[in-house]
Amino acid sequence: MLLESENMEDFLLILNDCFDMKNNVAGSITKNMISSQMINVVLPMLNPYEK
Image (cartoon, rainbow, N blue to C red; front, side):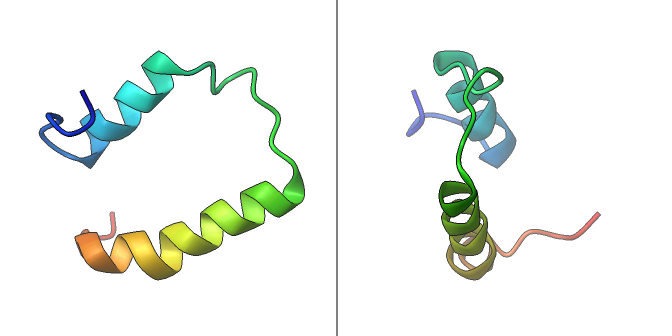
């Protein structure tokens, strides 16, 4: 399903639909690692426009 998503919004919505993200409490180390990798690795690869 993720590979067939049309854009990153759909990609993230699929993750949200398939996993209980709202009730998942991530620790500060996990949040730090994910946010750092999103900003430094993923977003530069996607090169999105900032709103």
